[in-house]
Amino acid sequence: MRKKIAAGNWKMNTTLNEGKQLIKTIINSLEKLPPKQSPEEMLVVLGTPFITLESAVKLVETFPQISIAAQNCYDEEKGAFTGEISASMIKSTGAKYVIIGHSERRQYFNESHSMLARKVDLALKNDLIPIFCCGEKLEIREKNGHFDLVKQQLTESLFHLSPELFSKVVIAYEPVWAIGTGVTATPEQAREMHKIIRDHLSGHYGDVIANNTTILYGGSVNAKNAHELFSQPDVDGGLVGGASLKADEFLAIVHSF
Image (cartoon, rainbow, N blue to C red):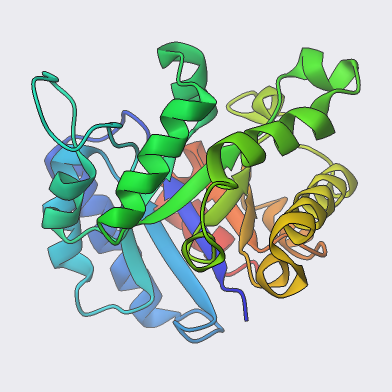
């Protein structure tokens, strides 16, 4: 059974103390109002800045429904790469997830399909669960190229994986035109793309793996639209940006399933 996930991507926000306080607020609220599902069915993932990872892991260690994610990793194991962080470094903090291929990484840092494939490999080698992002810019959608682009992103960065390794991956569809813009894909648009993704996975890995792969929607998810988005077939939760920095709003999203 595929897991439902409410994941927050804090991006380059919060100091160490601000991040710790945000996590404490989320924990306290979840204690008072626990998620409807068990940890086996539904999970909260917090994608914090690197400086917060170790502290975040310690704060949530007694809360099985909460896991910590890094927002990126480098595509080499170690070496003279000043300022980068490796998958093994992330693993050493106790984090369990890592976001790979976010559109901002693709856009601002020119991350290619092959680079992302290497990052996925290193994440899995270090027992980290990749949250692999895919999605299209507005001009691609306007030219009706969005389905082909997303399929290409998945094929070139993930389809080299064995079925066993691929089954550990979480996918996040993020229409780039809806990230940080306040514009959200309609529930119908989200449902359509998520079905395309699952069908594409089925064509390569078969129905069993495809039907057990968690596919998240990311793109201006908030407390008002989360329930309708998460109610769509093939939408298993969200990768939440700005709203994840507001404890009350993120908690409302957590309870939108």
